[in-house]
Image (tube, rainbow, N blue to C red; front, side, top):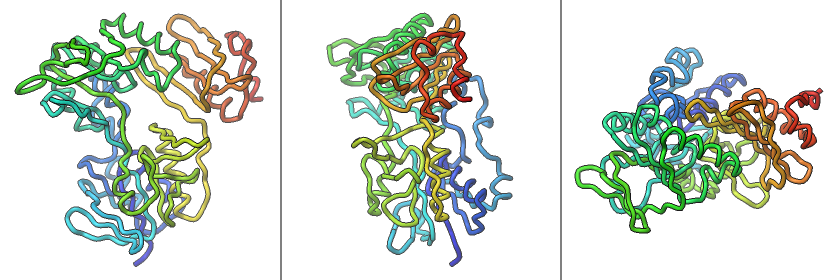
Length: 402
């Protein structure tokens, strides 16, 4: 057998690995296996513009059919891998077919967490991860009077915003005492709570869901304190878990994700992993980055590693969320904020520069895409503007990069 690299997973990370292999002049066979029966597509718009009806499904497609023909990438859809044999360098598909490989990549993504609650299997109780989920939510939203969103993170708030754009009553139940608590600082949480309330969203903090009620479909959410709310549709946005089960069964080192190094290499030779299914260790903690940036950059690193080269992923992580007409963008290189300064730029437009000691560790920008890009460059370069300079909108922070 000649060289054959098999990529399990045809999302953003899997596609990037295949693209990068060809860009780095790999001439062997590339087999890209996707479980879904649709070509690789963008997931972020599903909870944003797509759900709000502002973009069409065909606009989600990452690459058209001609791309795979031109690049000689064998894309197989509806392909489910049941077993990976690392010693024999074989994978087995659900239909019984066995395939050999000289290089293997896991890009299996993550799955939305589903609640372990009574009534969680009722029709109308949904999560949002893929196109199938989004289509179900969209169809049910068209007939709903009220949606209850459980979880005040990015997905939950984006779904609530899309619902309000469509005139559907929206209620958000968040177990913690503020929105997006794991991802943003309190000032950003407060800003978005005010934004959603101004658009008519009812937000309840400290809310613990006890059960979902209904007969033919969900009709109410029961809370642990005895209260409850009627609902025509319930969407849970309570995080995601890495799809690492096949990798773990094969014997790869996993810790709530496939463990990789900075070059996307796993614990087995000629086996890499990229995207939402991965985890890396830093400062004694297992870290998962669920973002397009991580999928793309790890995908590039994984392709290089399969070819015996080193291309570590070292860029500052960045994330974004669109809610109504507001864009939140974050660049984050560390945690433990002890000083925060605001850089104002008009109504509903500002950036928060966050410091630990004298070191800039993150920047949160609201409707300031230029400052977000600048922040990424500053953090990548390890540069920290003085707090008083960051707070002064007339001070040219780009001068630090010269």
